[in-house]
Image (cartoon, rainbow, N blue to C red; front, side, top):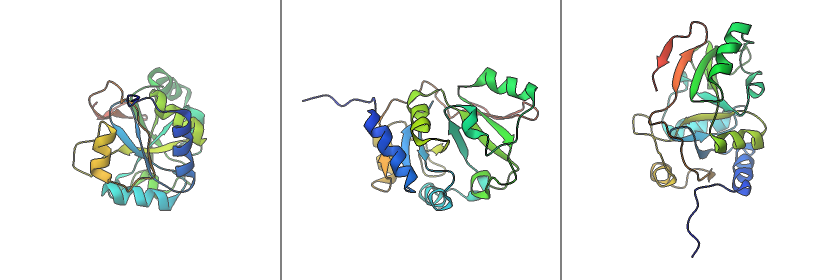
Amino acid sequence: MKPLTLNPTPFRIRMAAHVMHRGGVIAYPTEAVYGLGCDPRSEAAVQHLLELKQRPVSKGLILIAADFSQLRRYVAEPSPEQQSKLEQSWPGPVTWLIPARPETPRWLRGDHHTLAVRVTAHPVAAALCRMFGGPVVSTSANLAGHPPARNPLAVRRYFHHQLGCIVHGKVGPNRNPTEIRNLADGNLVRPA
C-alpha cells in the first residue's frame, strides 16, 4: 500500500482553486496552522466561512497572496519607505495592516479602515494563490476561541464534511499564527 503523502498534487491545488471559484470554502496549510480560505470577492463565500468558524464579520479577515501585486486592488499604495518594510518581511510570516481602498468590502476589513494582508512564504499556500489567480482569505481553521488545527484530521474534527476541499500538506515551522503589525507606525498588534 502506498503511504499517505502530505505533499499536495497540482491536481489537488487546482481542485481547491476550482472550489473557491465556485464559492466554496477550503482548508490549506500555512506557516503555522491550517487556514480556512475562500474567494475574497464573494460575499456569500466569506459569510459562509464566518458562519463555519463562528466569527463575527466585525473582526475582519486576512488575505494571503503569492506576491504583492495580487493585493493591490484591496489596499492603498504604500509609500516607498513602507514598501521597503514590506519587502524586508515578505514573503514571510508577517501580516501587515494596510489602509484599505474605499471599495474594499466590509466583509473583508470588518469594522476597520485597514486590511490585514500577507505575502505567504508557505509553498502550498503560495501555489494555491497562483492557481486561484489572486489573493485568498486566510483565517485559522478552528471554531472561534478553540485551538487552531495543525493537520487535516484536526480540520475534519472541526468541520466534518462542511468544506469543499482540504489541501493536505505540512504546516510551516512557526508555533503560533503570524505576527500582525501596523504598516503606518510599525507597531506590533499581535505577537507571533
